[in-house]
Length: 353
Image (cartoon, rainbow, N blue to C red; front, top):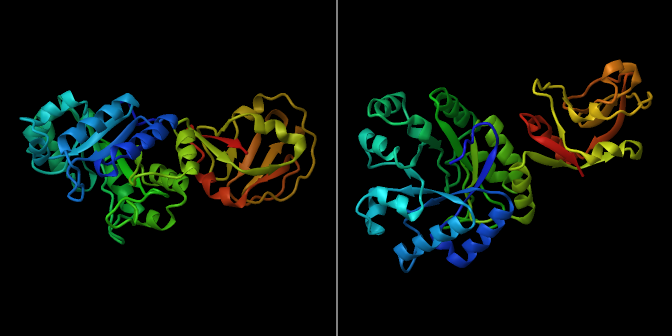
């Protein structure tokens, strides 16, 4: 699996019980959205399929066809159900990453890490576990800690808990991943969404915000959609996020529409007060002072000629700030999009729509 630490990467979940026909449609959408990996469980008791072995192979073949790497939740029982002699045989099926929750000793996990990327339950990993794996010769660079999703209401984790766990794991050099619920086709048998963070269950229609929160506030390197399918709007958000872009609806004075023709990125030394566009200062426009009024949160501003070498720098206010004769207020972010402003950083860019 490619290095997923530096950039936000979005994945999906796919299940045998959904049926191959619908799964193919989901895989088509995923490929169009530049999704490169998916999670599946091969040990869900509710999965009712006619020929488990054949349908698993069919799903794996389709994932390969659409360029989707599959992270499979497997157990010793899975090996038996698939008529394999050892779990290593799953590599020949095209599975390169396996999640192992139980039934494996440190020595077995160390052995498996030489064949697979190992995905473990983030909530149960202890410092002793990590030391035991090291002592057994495991390659921790091939480990990912995955948080559970929680089908039952009020059983999910808090964002603070997820962040605390992930900070501990990152110090040990282990990547992390978690789930957000879908907004369209929920997975049964409860159909209440499949989030890691309980709060996300209750505003699951805003998948973009949930993903950003899990990545930035929860410190998950990889963010997966837990449910079966998502809306077209959400697929578009996934496609853009996989490119490092968020679209922001805004009203901008026609005189300054030139800032709409580019993708803007904040400075690496991001300010809590304002978003500062790196790209805008490359434009050689003469900006005369005008409309130098109070800068409310969500205001879009541009530094005028009185700001000397900062002339032309486009800013978005993350907080209310007083007026400044050196700064023109040229527009406003739509109120429904202001909530995304804290997360436009770390190489995530914006486009105005």
